[in-house]
Length: 251
Image (tube, rainbow, N blue to C red; front, side):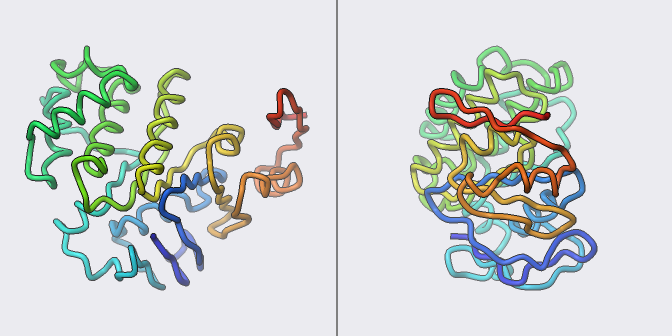
């Protein structure tokens, strides 16, 4: 779905080659400064820094998409999103619906579908600046998902999220990961960076591990080994297995 060929953001990440497949959840892990955000921003076509290589979405070079067309094909949740001052929660979601032609009955139904798992009902009529960081994050996630909801946007292909779980409690972390799985099952390529290595291995179809701007490992979760963790994160871990699930814990 999204193919990277010799992708480089100078002094940040690359060269990297690979593909984010449709109907797959790919989770990016790596230490701070390893290049995860730069990779996601470049994959979204939003990087302002000098880059090299090629990024193709569904066979078409990303640079060939117009801004409005690109907004219908992919959505990106940035790590440090700037929230418009004075808006209420429902108004933020309305902005997410702009590439779809604005708020329609179908969009309202999609908003209702997102409200329960993300706990949004009590947030819609509150001003964003009165919300906690986690509450704001849940609304931003919903706005991003709405933009490429496959039910209302037949052009949707790619969903990119930079640390969507940051600031969320456990309940909403799990709900968000469940929604990412649903969107992948409906045909999207879903890519997100997270810091919880065990969650990445449990919920991803494939894991990309970045280290100093390079791809240290990629593939099924089994590629994330104690040896890799020691090399990339400088942490010695042990593996515990229970009920068929393996968990890595610091020694």
